[in-house]
Image (cartoon, rainbow, N blue to C red):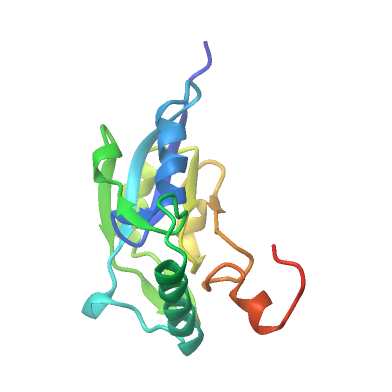
Length: 165
């Protein structure tokens, strides 16, 4: 039998959108992969600087949730902590250089020590530096929607496009 893939996850917090939790539940039930590490980004001052368009997108998403209440909303924030059976949690305070997040050397060393096959980035940010080479197959980005960092379909609605991604 082949060895399972060792997977890491990079998140903003242990409260994640429902689609991320669903992805982790599928991973937990898989016979081919295990979640070994969850990297939680810790921004100085409690929050990173957010461009105005991200604030608009958050307000749009909140309004949409209020107007169209969906118990299975893919973007609803839910806890991930109860799915971390054996996964280690590593809190990292990245530095930002020209819009790209870089991890401190000690964080990259800690990630490499886990001997991961792949890291999944499930937040809208750009990573740079050595963290991109901290796992065997690099960092794979998973995003919901076409707009980077925005609410899904927001850009299409604002631009009056008849088709959404």
